[in-house]
Length: 366
Image (cartoon, rainbow, N blue to C red; front, side, top):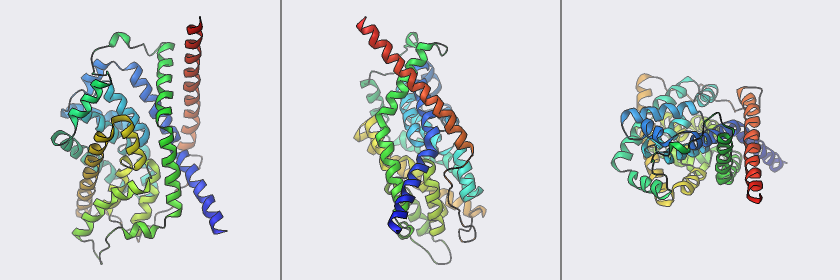
């Protein structure tokens, strides 16, 4: 009977994770399709076309307001990159779209308390600064630019081919891009959610807790460093991404991981195995390895800095005194209403894409 119960819990968790990220996926891929269709390359180059402080800041701002999950953020980042955004700005856009968004703050507040919300956003800015520095000094910027040139997307001015946002043909093109992006990586997303749900249920918390050094009454420097280093690696092994990694971060924090280690784990949703497979599909193996290493190093350093900062301020919560509750996946909340709205949006885009293919088929025969 216990196995049957665990299978039921696994299916429930998988469904719950899919439910939590559904609206963000539709929104992210819809924005990606719109960027590919309506944003002139010249304009993208003007806004995010270099690695200056202004360009990086704008990338972070636009990423934050795009409000997306990690999979959709990767698709949007690729779109802005191909439209002429600097590689560093595209990576910053992706980081902000996953770690500086409002809905993540809501989930963190409800499950882990306000210190984690503040740490997530402060740390997100630190993470962007570190990634920018590493990309400028040792990052494969030239490799990304060569990839864009090979794809025939060098950022040259092709504004004459950009349709109006008020035209039906323009939205038909955006819908086609939406379906194409979705068809490219939906299997990776499905595998990630299924594996993550299974791991959350079947792998005991003691296994993850054993990976972290535990000190005595206090937290040692060695423990802070080790936890910050291991936190993102646990995220990689767990396959858990987007909102789904917050409940697991809460369980790890209750089990003894340091504050900084938990923050580094939450950032690790950008380097989980399914995400790395998406990067590989987009950019190739060599660039994926380089990007993954840079993100990992930046996450570990950020977690350590945040740990020291919040400890000095006295803002680190006591895990033993504040037990974290379990996440309720299904409720009549903002996720419910957003899922309803974006189910209609996704269906409309899918239908519009099908109409475009039908018309093209008829024109071909005609």
